[in-house]
Image 1 (cartoon, rainbow, N blue to C red):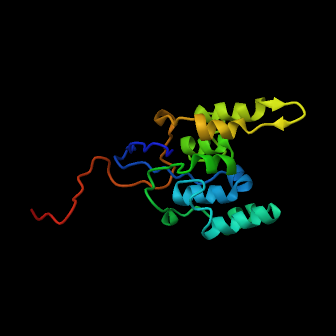
Image 2 (cartoon, rainbow, N blue to C red):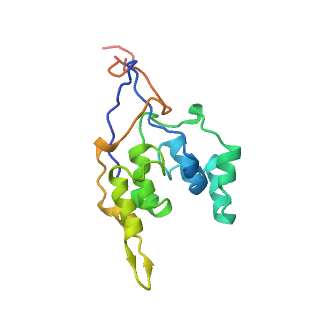
Image 3 (cartoon, rainbow, N blue to C red):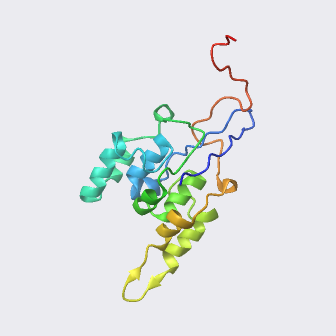
Length: 183
């Protein structure tokens, strides 16, 4: 199930606010491929198999050093943003929650960062499931991933945008010409 499209929001200057936050140090260190993909494509897993995200993924899987790519070889560039830069989405909730973790998936959709929003909104609920559910002799069960995949219903009220996010667009409510005008 796709996350809902969130209506554009105008900033103080009347332009639509962007939705792509440059990844935090924590996200670039712990989930480098998802952090790069989230910034460039607006989805934490859609762009993992291309560009610098692929290099970070391979290095992370091979030796746990994918953070080298995200810190040293990549920087957030608004020119590399693909798709609608005023939106973020989670196209494959299950894949994303199993790869990045349930709390990080929800945090990305709500705050624009995989790690910064873990204690806010619905991500807080998933974070609590991550830390509080422990079964003796088995260990932690992936309840937070299950919650993000099957139970989480994205709340448009939790979707945050700030003026610091990249991807600001045109004026909200601006007249747009469609077609060639011939009737």
